[in-house]
Amino acid sequence: MGIPVSQMWTVATYVLGQKLAGRERYPLVLMLEPLFRCNLACAGCGKIQYPAHVLKMNLSPGECFRAVDECGAPMVSIPGGEPLMHPEIDKIVAGLVARKKYVYLCTNALLLREKIDLFKPSKYLSFSVHLDGGKDEHDFSVCKEGGYEIAVDGVREAVKRGFRVTTNTTLFDGFEPKRVREFFDEMMALGVEGMMLSPGYSYDKAPDQQHFLGRARTRRLFRALLSNRRPEWKFNMSPLFLEFLMGRRQYKCTPWGMPTFNVFGWQKPCYLLQDGYADTFGELMESTNWERYGTESGNPKCANCMVHSGYEASAVHDNFTTWRGFFDTVKATFSRYRDSEALRILEEPVKAVHAPAGLVQLTMKHEAAEEVEV
Ligand code: SF4
Image (cartoon, rainbow, N blue to C red; front, side, top):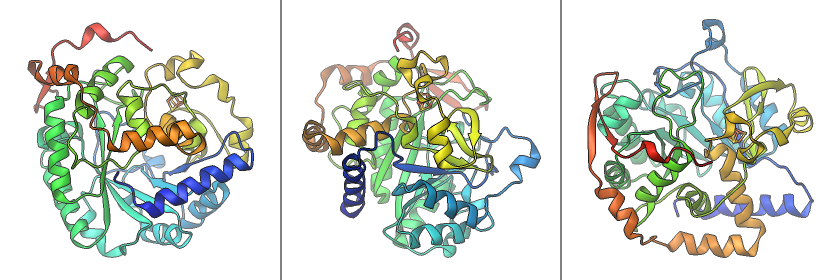
């Protein structure tokens, strides 16, 4: 597994502590968005569509520390926007590392080489580099030719300097699983610690609304990607969450598991939806009507969601609070998932279509028929 033992131990003791304290709802990862500005305009992103005055706003280091202390989660993910564009990102990261939080600084790496001297390698800090597949797929996804080479150069530099580096890949409809598997090989050869994967969530503000995956197609794609896997591949994720993506197990959403704090306050109910804001973490937990969310709730906004910010905390809870979850995790960690049907899916023909940005995107032929299941 691509997660250091010290981090797993911290998370395990934290989750068990919550269970012993009888807490039904607790945060696992704080999603801290210190800004929405970005130096890319990705077609599948729902975060950069704000008016200019909002895009200029930054959370101060003090506001970030108050949110982290209030929330108490052992891990902090810093997405955005592009966090390396924040003028005080070094102070924010240093303050979180001093608090012994495991920090994932999510970056498109366009500025990584330029800003890397602002940071020191630490077991608490990981650069989580956004790479949506190989060169063609990534450049299409981020709408920037040459984006892949710059990101890979950033990964190389960070690995060379002794930083923890993970990759963060969002998969959309039309991704060819064989190519994505080659991409896994390329990333492991670069020396990254582990890879993170997520199906794209259908942000209603995202410019490209055509390539989001529904639940059935997500399971089919992840089954093809992650079955018959190579032993060298390491994933910086819960093995049970990966089984959830492959359609091998069911979980209910726990949106409070990865709460979001940004320039507007505590976002209700999760990283993806914006049904209002709370001033404090306590108010978020108390005043959100959690029953309205998750696939089983019937909320149409949740119908096709399988993303980590809703479901990975459910898998981690299962892992550390039940013997069954623990043994399933051990088994999943060593399983290669032999699956002849998945091999067959990999061999299915693909057709090339022309993407809006002029880049060639490959798409699976038989996609449509399955888009029903929830
Ligand atoms: S199902 Fe997805 S969109 Fe709905 S609350 Fe959970 S994480 Fe948010």
